[in-house]
Length: 341
Image 1 (cartoon, rainbow, N blue to C red):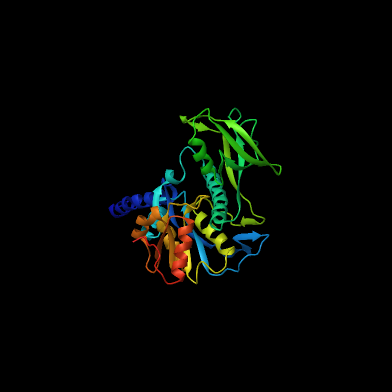
Image 2: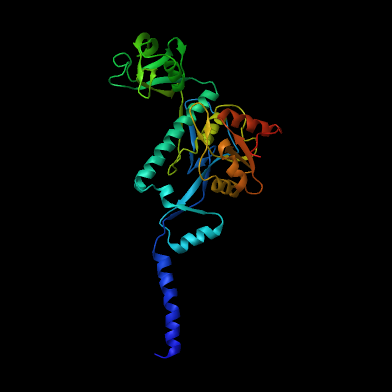
């Protein structure tokens, strides 16, 4: 082998090694980027994303789009560099998406559970906003708790200590304001019959100075119609706000979007509180590319959203379902809406 060939071989070996390594060896990162958006007022494969059966539904049009983040895993070096260089994706340590103590399947199952819980909270928040009936049922009774033998799973709570209760937090507030040993009258409905029983409170496990009832209350729709959410292969709780807005829009006259292409994100509690989410930069990109001109941003995400807002997208700050509805109504009437600026 002459010197020229030897030099060429010596130069090519690192290139070949790099090429093989870069295309075969995976890196400990995951790529996050814009995911699909879904119009909660529309259909997917001919099925309404939000379906309400058993009552009249107001015709809806326009867009109230929920947004998602796409996650790409098992990247090789070249793929990771390509995603990073694109400007549309970001790289995060894989353990931030898939914790080392959980399998990928366990993470996906957890995300699905969060998604289903967000559907329930979205419906309840919408019913509260519309002043429609919501009942408070006993979901569980501690085996050795103060209410054992008095309350049963499925009982509907009406009042605790003389105070009407419609939410789980209301029960906690009344009970926590009393001391262990106090007797509370519990009014409830069982098998269609209203009953009242006294329960002597125990001590709360995490604070012995406060009363403890030993039941888990759970809010349930008290309406004669059914709300279904027909979106598969989506996980996490961040669709809650947009699902709730869709229910409100379908059960009330007029259009919340008022001709605007509105997208947004945010978790929602049954009481209508909107919470922060992750991946806001990618959701903003996804929304704008889908055609959105207005984006509903949880208050706690406003700072990050301002640093990543695409041109042509108005950021509207929301703290609750009520504030989101009010903001959309303001936009529709030409008034100012709370912004992230």
